[in-house]
Length: 215
Image (cartoon, rainbow, N blue to C red; front, side):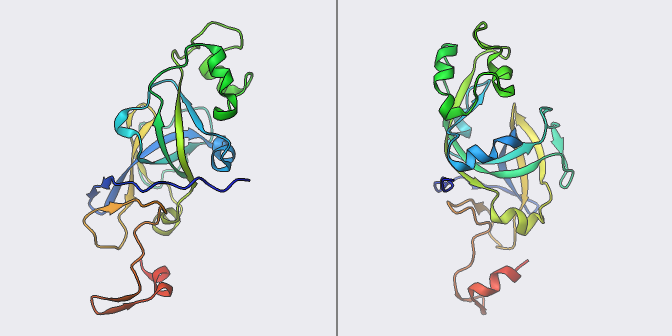
């Protein structure tokens, strides 16, 4: 299996609301994890263009176990999905012109003819184009990493609160952690919050072995 594609640094400041960091989320199929983090899946197939304001940002993947879409809102700990990982997306502004173009990208989007996802977006092979949902777009997956460290550390593995903001995109609320900053940054390593460097901070000796004990 190929190594996970590393995320590029994101300069997007994440606002804090009462101790919560707001992040961007995207609902996906739970079954897509192997090809996504293995590096085979390089395109995400969708029925709408990628909004420009969501491109080149860190996006939390919200994996649903079935074909049923997520509710428009869920409180923290409600379950019904899992945090799969984090990706960055780009492109996806022009639809496929025809079925042949869509199928020629099968090695990149991993949606072969006859599969459930293929029928959802493209209908039956050899049928009319576009498929049942209309135009089909492919968003480029520029980077992908599995579930980040901070999810287990600050959520205890529980699902975060989510609110739908645009089609498959959600606002995801994560605890801001104990870094005391007015805002949080998601860095290329997706460590959240950033580990304090070794040395003295506010009179306290901070060594790497102390970090796991910080709540």
